[in-house]
Amino acid sequence: MNSNETMMQMQQLRLLGMYHAYALQLEQPLNHQLEGHELIDHLVQAELDYRKEEKTSMLLKQAKLRLSATIAQIECNPQRNLTKQQLIILAEGNYIKRGQNILITGATGCGKSFLACALAHQACMQGYRTTYLNMNRFIEKLTLAKLDGSYLKWMNQLERQHLIILDDFGLQALGQDARIALLQILEDRYEKKAIIITSQLPVAKWYDYINEPTLADAIMDRLTANCSKIELTGKSRRKQNN
Image (cartoon, rainbow, N blue to C red; front, side, top):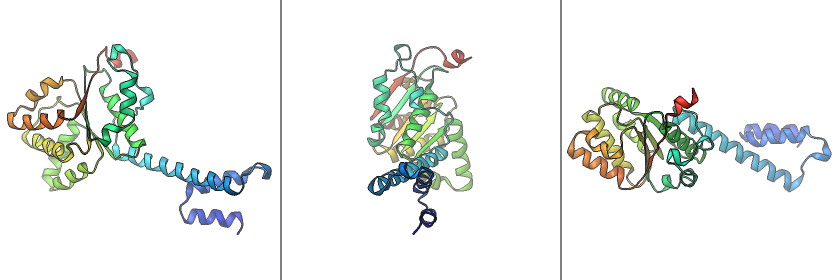
């Protein structure tokens, strides 16, 4: 079998990482081309890398993150009340494995959404199914799902996500449907899958924001029983970037 036939078979088998790596090898002078076990190792690694990149791209597309943010772009210092050690621990993704919630609070413009999107980006790179929703979008999707009869399907889709980000919690009043849906999501995910919530409101004020004692008790109990809290401080980063 010649190299052209081998490359055709790689395409037929959709071994595209191997295909491109082998094509690059064939472009090299003969004395620079890998042989035997070295070539096999190289092609297998190229295929693994290609599939990981493809999976990450798919997960990022499905996540629909609001901001293009990465862990490397997060600034850690005392003024922000965020340490490198905290960020390293979060970047490892163990909170997702433990089904732990991350509650990020702080004033407008301090970088809450940016941090949440960076953690979501990291989760996608680690192979976790992720969904980003700001609260306006969450309520819109909930309303539509109730109207067209797809509510159960939507909730099942959310339940399958390893990580959900609910951004800007507290900016829009919650109706009864939203409270019940939020409680159901938390119940489905309790100590199994993670949620990141960002809010301008301190966590201590979330009970009053939910504004329904029975549901507020249940929601806050599930949110805070297994969580890490990050209270970002400092001046608005939007003003700094202008």
